[in-house]
Structures are given as structure tokens and as C-alpha cells.
Image 1 (cartoon, rainbow, N blue to C red):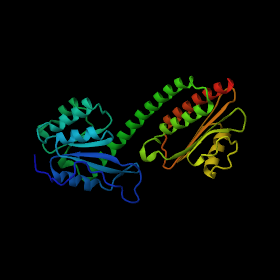
Image 2 (cartoon, rainbow, N blue to C red):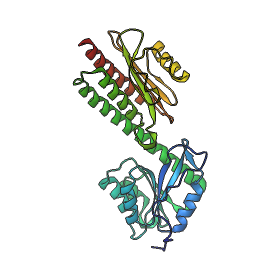
Image 3 (cartoon, rainbow, N blue to C red):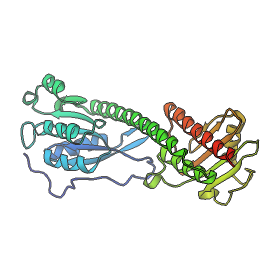
Image 4 (spheres, rainbow, N blue to C red):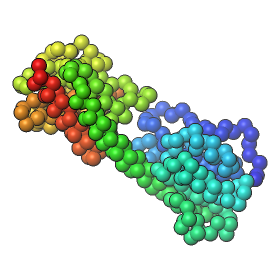
Length: 315
């Protein structure tokens, strides 16, 4: 293995420069040649994938790669050398990632300067990788297209995984609803669950405001109010809400359906007996909701509506 610069950090996640927003995609570069790290990062430093920049992590051997992968479960892409401390060090990393860590989402692109050491056909058949590239053929343009395609594939896999998680949460939450007897408690839990489903319970993305309202008439009563809306509990008028928020809620009420905005989501459901439930969440960051998740959120609101209706009918 060639010498590496001992002053380089094993993991290097840069602070986002001004003008770039969004959580960066993590790209792990694994190679025993320092020059490969430098050239790769230089070629990709200004690349954004669906509006998000890249953050580069570095490992210079298979052993170091396993440390990083065990510590950083949200890596989107691994650019992986085959031959490092052993002739098959890179392939051992693939086996560790897929079988020991059980990470099936991260995309893996093998890069080799010695293709004869690991024949492409044999590697593709035996290992769960997403690309096999010879270093000599990876021009800047080809590297960009390879990375862009791999990260968008990772995004799609994560979206599918998230939809499955959302469905599981909805099913579990629906089962718990039978035990609730207090309207305000149900509304509070439902609002928190909706924020969690929208990724708004993760660290820096936790700043959100919300209201939960219900009624069997045309005037909704606000049962729970959080964040900047705190203090609105018990009110039936929406005049105190900011114009964009009030407009979206009024649209949901008029169209009798959930409405999705760039930074706010209004979940709406009306039961067959005419009982209405509205859950509104307003975030300080953009909320990206695909069509499958919208359907799941509608299902979530429907479960909440029936639970609230049942509690109300027992009063």
C-alpha cells in the first residue's frame, strides 16, 4: 500500500459554503492512493444532486473503510478501490457492508487500476455492486454521470424504505388509538406522529409549528397548538394564523382533502358521519412529499379522524 498523508483526516465532512442548502449526500472515497482522493474530490466538488451538495469522507484501506461505514450509516455512495492492503480488500469491504452491516441501500462503485486482479464479470455475478469502472476510463464527465446516477438510485431506495416505515408506523399508531380516551391527547400524539413521518423530528429539522383541530360542524376547534401557534388552543377562528397558513387550511376545508405546500402540510379527513379532523404542520425547512407518502398521510389522517369521532361519541 502506498504511503498516505498522515495529516489527512479519516472522515472529512465540510461545512456547507454560503448559498448551498440541504443536507449533503455523503460520498466515501476508498483508495490507498492519496492522489485518487484529491482528483476525485476536485472533479466533484461543485456537483449537486437534486439540489444537495456532496460531502466527502476518506478511507485509505479496507480496514479504515469498515470503520467509517460502521460509524456513518447514511453514506449514499462508496467509490471503492479493489486492490489495497490485499488484492481483494475492496471486495471484502463489499461483503462486510452488505452482509455484516446489512446495508442494502448504499450504492457501491468499484474502481480498479488493475482489472485483471478482479475480473469484471466474476465480480458483478458474485458481489452486490452497482458499477465496475477502470480508473483510466473515468473522465470527469463519466465520473459525474456515474455519481449522479448512483446517488439518485440511493435516493429512490431510501424513499421506498421510508414509505414502508411510514406504513408500519401508521398501522402501529392505529392499533394504539383504541386505548385513547382523551381528545386532546389523541390530537397531541397525532400531531407529533405526523411531524415524525415528515422527517421533522431529526435534529436540525425539528423546528416546526402545528395545530390539530376537529369538529362535527363547519367550525373547527383547535385541540392542540404548538410552536408559534401556541396559545390558539380552544379557538375556532383561524384569523390569528399567518396568511399563507390560513389560506392553505381554508383550501383543505373547501376542497375536503389534504393539501401539501413547500414548507407546510395540511392533513384533512372527514368521516362518513361528517366528523372532520385537520392536522397542520409548518416547518422551517422544505418538505418533500412524494405521491406514495401523500396517500399514506391521508390514511394516517383517516385513522385519526375515526379515533377522534369514536372518543367524541362516547362523551
